[in-house]
Each structure stands twice: as C-alpha cells, then as structure tokens.
Length: 482
Ligand code: ADP
Ligand code: GLC
Image (cartoon, rainbow, N blue to C red; front, side):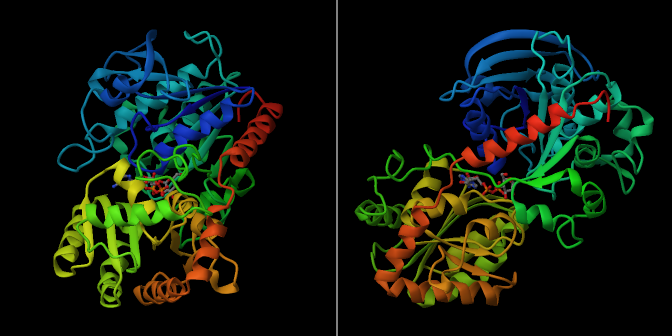
C-alpha cells in the first residue's frame, strides 16, 4: 500500500508538540511493514538543514499565486523514511516557529502557507502526477492539512482515498471568508455543507467534512468530541460523521524514550535497577537550582503553555506542595500569560523551579528525574508526555479525560499507575497530589507502582496495525468520488 502522510511538523526535523512526535514515529512504524510511506511537509529552513540525501523533485508551478513551488525529495534522518519538502520560499523560508512569527502572532499568510502544503499533497495524490508515484491513501493531520480532502473532492476522479486525523480540535484554522478566493476552491465550498464555519473559513472543518475517514488520537477523545463540552462547535458535524470516526490511541517512540538507553540522562536505569533514576533526580535538582535532597518528592512538568494544559491549577497547587516539603520542576513555553505566571510562581515559591523555553534534552531529564509528572490538562486528545513519564517510572498525575483516561489508571484500586482526578478544579488537583505524597512515603508500594508503569506496552505497533486496517478498508471500498 502506498501512503502519503501530510503534516506541518515532524520530529526530528521540526517539532512544537505531540503532532511532531507522531509524524516522526507513525510513518516509521508503518514503513516497518511492507507499506511504502512518504511524508510531505513544508520546506522550513530547519527541515531543509536536517533531512538527508536532498534531491530536486518535480516543480509545482505557482498554483495559488503565492509563489513558485517545487518538491525536494529527501529522507528522514534515522528512520530513512522518504520525505517530500514543499519548497516555496515566499511562504516557508522563515526562521523560528512554523505557525507564529517572532511577535508571537500567527503568520499573517498562514492560510496561503497551509493551503500550499495541502495543494501540493493533493497534487501528489492524483494519478499521473509529476512525481511518478501515486498514493492509495493520503493521511492528513490537523487543520494545516485540512484542505487536502477538499481539493481532492472537487477534482474528483480516481484520486487517493483520504484519512483526516484530529490531534487537537481546538485549533480550527479559521480565516475570514474573504480568503476563499485565494485558496483555489470553488465558491460552493463556502457552505454549511463545506468549509464554512460561523461566517469564516475553517480548514479543520474542511478536513472533517470532505475526508473519507476521520480518526482522532484516543478512543475517549473520539467520544468526547461528539459532545458540546469538548466539540468546540464541531460536535454536530462529528456526530453526523460518527460512522466514519474512530479513536486510535497514539504510541510512543520506544527507542527515543527509553530509560535503559537514553543518552540525555546521566545513567541508564530500568524497573529492576532504579539507581540511575536516583542519580537523574539529584542532577536535575542541581541543574534546576533546587536543594539536592533525595527524600523530597519532586513533581515535574514539561508542557506547551496554553490554557488546555491546566497551568492555572499548577500555579495554585504548587505552593501547597512546597509547604509539605515537595519540589516542583517545570519546563514550558507558549502563551505569555502562562510564561509570566510561572516565572512569578518561581520567585514567590522557592522549591518551584521554572525553565521557560523549548529544550528537548531537559525534557528527557525532567521526565527521568522527577518522581511525579503533572499533567492536569482540561482536555487532552491523547498526550504523549504522560506515556513517556510512565516508561521512566515517573508516576503521572492526570485529569480523567481523553488519552489521559485511556493510558493512566488510578492507583486507588491497588493496581493502577498514577493519580487520576475527575473534576478539572484546583481542589481536585491538590487532593490527587496529596494522595501522591502519601503513596510516596510507602516506598514498597511506590516501587511496585513504578514497576507496573514501566512495563506498560506503549509502542506504535498496535496503532500502526489499526491505521493499516483502516487504509485497507478504504481502498477496498474505493469509489470514484464521495
Ligand atoms: P501536545 O501535543 O498537546 O503539546 P503531547 O503530550 O502529545 O502534548 O506532546 C508534547 C510533546 O512536546 C512531548 O514530546 C513533549 O516532551 C514536548 N514538549 C512540550 N513542551 C516542551 C518544551 N518546552 N521543551 C521540550 N519539549 C517539549
Ligand atoms: C495534540 C494533542 C495531544 C496529542 C498530540 C499528538 O497536540 O494536544 O494530546 O498527544 O496532538 O497526537
């Protein structure tokens, strides 16, 4: 089977969050079978620098009047998975974050940038395209690739079948209706039966409406997004398309996130040899400027700083934990309001140490060195960091929602791997944190819980198998146009 995997970021080329991890690991897992998987993403400067074996590919012309584009063929470092970079310097030759400029605001031409990515992927999904390779399925991810199924719908013919995966429904790719003329889609697409959403154009809605199959990244989130509480206004459409929607739980890259082999931590460790974890904790305390105390329970957090992640709960609860002799180590970057709130917390509450920024290596050291991993997200489509934490014997404290509910079981029943609370309220977060402190004092029970957490099967094999089955069904039920 030939699969084109379209994404706006992919580790290790460029990553801002979990989508990057998934786009790095899932194609690799699929390619381990007999599938021919290729990734397509924008030719950001970081991507051009990091890929291997670059060669000029076919030209794409100037399909949107936004600049000449061509494809660059290359391979992902490490996995060797083929990748096509959409090289349109007018849109992608910019340093920094793929979505926002140095002022923290969305790039003003994001509609064109991601229409170009989608357009290029759609062109490659048509038979007889200039690359000489035609996929059976094009797998689009999040709003940045939401126009792929829309283009293919209007072009018709024997084009590739489309899968659209929602990694986060909150990001809707909303633009004023006036941009429609720049996207190369017919006027009738601007309709409630199309990509119109409350008087705007929504790239996300295009993906949800026009694709052959929909998936999201955990079974619980697949159910949640059909409700008004979690559906971000798309719940009606998602209920209508419920028959086409499945939840496939993400895996993690068990090579990159492996405490027995991790070169970013001081000493490897495993469930039966935990000495390396003690060393990781001591060095993390030193690195973060916290007192080097092996007995102080250490809460860690690594996160994008957005309201989704419940940073306000952490700001409220952390001083209470410190008052009980615990420490808190946080790495994050994102919204200025949360960056400032955390900086303030670190000043007012010694025992809390905060590093603002994006640091892949420190992320590993926090996940390895902490005792408890805080992830009190209001909603969480899947969440990868809690799965990394489990694998590193760092017991997660999570809200019972989305992928957190599907991956962490509360220790209450005498089994379990973490501390789960039900209501997204700071009192519930505090109560779960105090339960964690209580268990921490029972060294035997703590160790047993760590062993259970570390033995959880979290690789990509199961998810890859589910996607393969979905692709196969789609190809078997192919029809000329939806
Ligand atoms: P989301 O995709 O919503 O951000 P996930 O838990 O799925 O949440 O994935 C987050 C990914 O981004 C993880 O790999 C995590 O380690 C990484 N990450 C988040 N913030 C930072 C940061 N400040 N520095 C380094 N890595 C980070
Ligand atoms: C999104 C979600 C996160 C998920 C990730 C990868 O960023 O917020 O929960 O793990 O995508 O699917």
